[in-house]
Image (cartoon, rainbow, N blue to C red; front, side, top):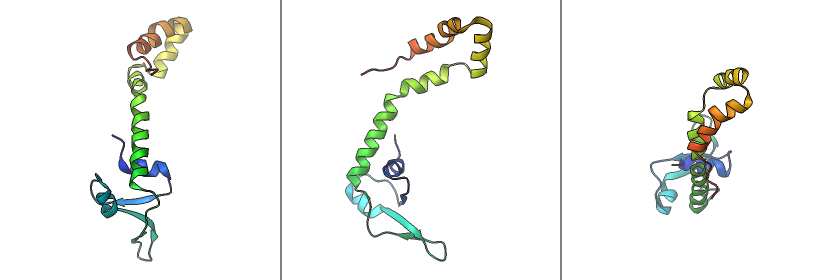
Length: 117
């Protein structure tokens, strides 16, 4: 699951936020989320009274990021199954590009096909 803070940071990486617990509703957003605008002389956080983004904007961004993450599951599975780069280079050196593709790459791609939907 894409983290709530990651969604906020994705909207604007300059946002610094403090979240006091889980956010599951507009009420939680209103009461538990504080944006940090700076620090005082004692290095304590200074919180803004306003929020630069809405709860719905964060939920929408979180859903967008989650959908993107989910759509790339095949990439993560492939990456875990491919041999190391060193092993692949050695295989190419000894057997050639065509054998490398047929023996090392295509079986993984066939096992974890790209979802074109």
